[in-house]
Length: 219
Image 1 (cartoon, rainbow, N blue to C red):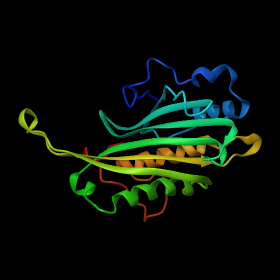
Image 2 (image 1 turned 135 degrees about the vertical axis):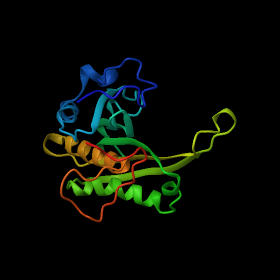
Image 3 (image 1 turned 90 degrees about the vertical axis):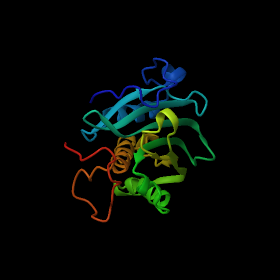
């Protein structure tokens, strides 16, 4: 897959997406979880690249960035961070935690829907459940933002954006390793849904994606 450049990477500083200063001493469960992320098979519309992980949230961290791309257009983008504390974390109720940011531009009339935050949150939990994934202690926010332009920028049309910030604890499987590849795939399902793409395969016809802002999908 091609690398997504310049997206959500203000703090990248040339890092290659390794586990930061914990790379040389990472525990075996964490290494296995990271290897699964790197080996995941994703939709062709998803472009993914490593990102600099946070340094203070947990002893071990791995981060990646992804974008849903249609030609020259980015329909949605986001960041996913895997955290690991071998000693466990009371707030997580486990030793692993997934933290995410997803964002996309919207048509103003869609952004004005009062039910949009609840719908977007249900897409996250629904994407995880649809892949049979157990997740604990979910938390997060859904934020709508709108911009209106004036003066020299007055010709620009109003712009609206949706942003989902969330975290959850994945179930740990054999050897204390969560199925991070499946969690990544579910997260990419969310990205595609926010971007307005149809499901990749047969699914629940009641699942509705956001209308695309930049024209019809041609892939």
